[in-house]
Image (cartoon, rainbow, N blue to C red):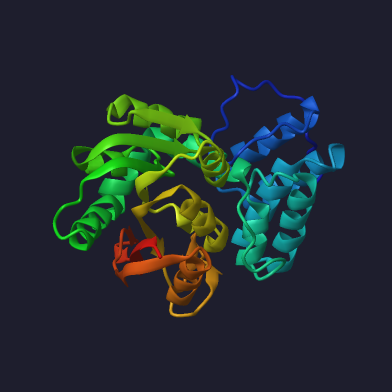
Length: 326
């Protein structure tokens, strides 16, 4: 793009952004928003330099335009400009307290800021609302996802071949894949997820007795207040979005029946703590899993290696764990 070419108001057909999947939150300035969409058109043509130039113009107009800063960070990262990407992602983070775009995660991936920042509910909700329409096909067919089956097998083993439960809570139920796997063995099935889009798809499966849109720990706290107790609590491929299992385990322990069972999967790594992976998913070392359970007075019944999905055709290291109250 010529240096003299400036971002001027242009006619945009509808509201759709073409090109790579880039999340959009308005700057509040019509011209800056149009510049951003023009930049995305350049990205669709693989014109990274042109797109970056237009984004810089958008930011001149609206200095707090988090979406434009984030897109500029992504372009600089792709160009190999790590320092420039860190600056742009940092401005996106500072302009967006709810971290809608996940700028803090990108900074951590680049080795800047917190090593394992927590994901905001806003970020996770947006992520899964986006993925909901194609979630089942992508996860099962492209990534060979088997988390629910792995959990059902583990629960069956832990119960001596009798995996029946009066009531089950499906944490982060998504589109209902785990609910469908466990439904034949459960009398009363509740699913909770932060994403309304995911819940809508789960509802269409018709396997749940109750579905709730809520942040997980917040929902469990509400259930504890009414003294709800569950015989089985399942979390399939959920804690990859949680930077610390200790608060989650403590919450679960409050609503688990005295002889109940907590079954979950995590992605793992050889270390003892928590690591943010390049996929922007958390991997939990086995030591962290055991520490979280012990802190909640939960006794491991089973912790074993089990991959619940693949990444680029390679099984992702994981653990399946089952615990009961002490």
